[in-house]
Image (tube, rainbow, N blue to C red; front, side, top):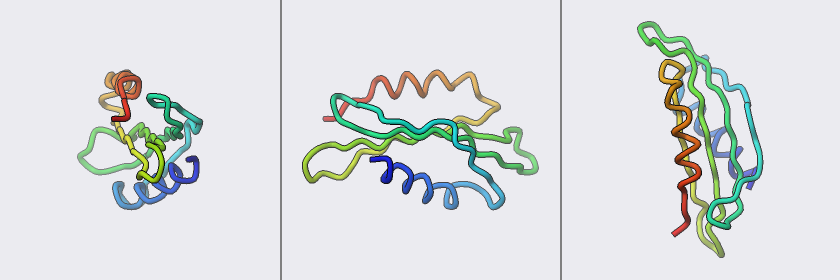
Length: 100
């Protein structure tokens, strides 16, 4: 699971953020969702864009093994630093996840 999560992150950064953005790891650890094993990676992406108030996003990627032969489930959340009051919502969302 750690490899799948890291691969997802490595593919997201260059496609979803602007040239010159840098990612700073904050957390990487095993997680469990509804009894299923997964891996969570949290990182900060720093950027500077003219006219954009935010200069950093806190991103969370969670990849979960959904069972025999199924593709993993992926949860992604990003909160810009000018809306940091929303960070607790990521925790609430992670706690509410279920595998159906």
